[in-house]
Length: 483
Image (tube, rainbow, N blue to C red; front, side, top):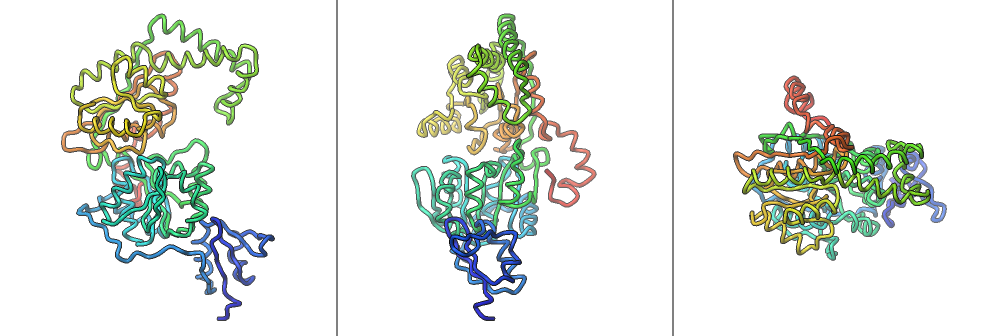
């Protein structure tokens, strides 16, 4: 077949430039857009796999100048670990989906090892994208041990791109227009971050035909699941916390403790909340509507008395989040569990620092410097610091294998956040471990409704699903689980 019948693909700044006969262009018309500036057609980088597949099936020859990734035939996994049942089922589902899709696994169930299995299967140059520098270092170190070869890092001051490379989302967004054709497999860890406006652009610039998204909490409140499906693929497998409890994960219980405000706290809370609610109702705001919170902030800045209303909102929230009774209960739980590794979670830094100052406990927030954070975590693992107080930085992405008790002093209504916090204490560390998640809620406050919203997940209502699992089989009718 002559060159005039061939289709040519080139990689350019995160996009594909396509030249070809009308017959070929008609086949891929939904993926391409005309670029009159260069007299050719363009497509986002992530359309590479779909375009190549359609042209190949039609028997149209392709001059592929876009691809710059390599096969690694000698890539070998050096590990005595045998894939667990849920990992084997997930790999089967991912392979059946042509190596594209999202796999949902709880924290501590072996997501990193599963990604290594996928890398070992496809044997292509691979980019792993992670949300934090802590995870960047953890992934790079683990992959070097598993494959016994150097692993490049992109982010945190490093720019070393190798056949196996780990990058932060931020660095990938900056560099993908230059390196988006260098990897045949891209792994998005904590892929619920991917639908963000910057992250999704980076994902669209990568041509990798093999794509794997990993997350323990795929739920989003902004409809981002559609973007995740377009950029990575369908959710091909789900393993749930309650399915893996007692086998892969430590057995756990959750306990909600309702505490009463003191008379003085209740009076101050009622007055502050009354002022806040009156302002919201007068303005006709409904916080379930998109943009209502930003509108509230703008009104507080413009309207007479708005600053006082904002102060009242913050005061009632502070009272509910860190009452004297909560501190008493927190201290009692710590004293009743000597020697246990305990993580204390708060919704904000101020509450974390108040707890740390009152109870003389180490506090870890996003303001904690890297060296100090490393020291705190080392001391926690060693047992020298059996209790760590944190706001949100330990919700995901930090390996804390010995923690067995979590205490949620305050938090948002996010189901994802609550499941992430439960996941911090579920990693098995030997026989006999019993994980406990305490949730402290101030009675008669808005925290009661917040608690109900964030507990709306099967991890907190496992008995409702046990009968269904017994009828359908442990992992559902199709063996893939369901989200």
